[in-house]
Image 1 (cartoon, one colour):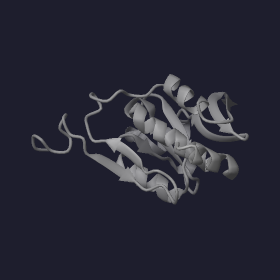
Image 2 (tube, rainbow, N blue to C red):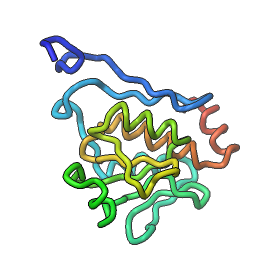
Image 3 (cartoon, rainbow, N blue to C red):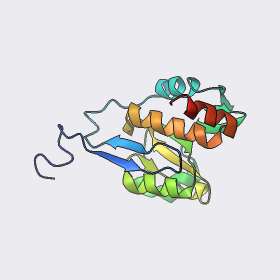
Image 4 (cartoon, one colour):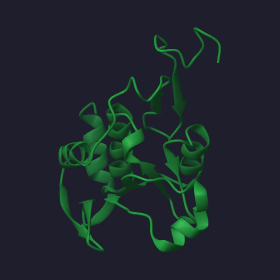
Length: 166
């Protein structure tokens, strides 16, 4: 990149990913990770539990968050098969699993920011994306968690949430 390009520190350019009718687009600041505040499990819990009718629990011994007994985000450490499939590209650090509206959204996220979003063969055909938690900004995490919640919440609850201006 040249000085002053999209990745320069002062840039405010944002990338948008369409997530479906009636839903906000996911946006991500185009700046180095060292400039953005990176997310933590505390951020995931705070954002998820602020959404209506959300409960925190465990699934397969890991933290998970559900709405109407449907998981929408969860702690998802890489398993032996994931590590074998990813090889040297396997990320270290905390991994968040998140439901998405459909496979197109997942593919768009992975294509747009492969340093943050990825998938494994385990999730082939399943509308979910894996996220390197220590590489996603808190702002982008909030949008991802809300979209995951909208994908799993009962329609009436989601409509009420959106009508309230969220």
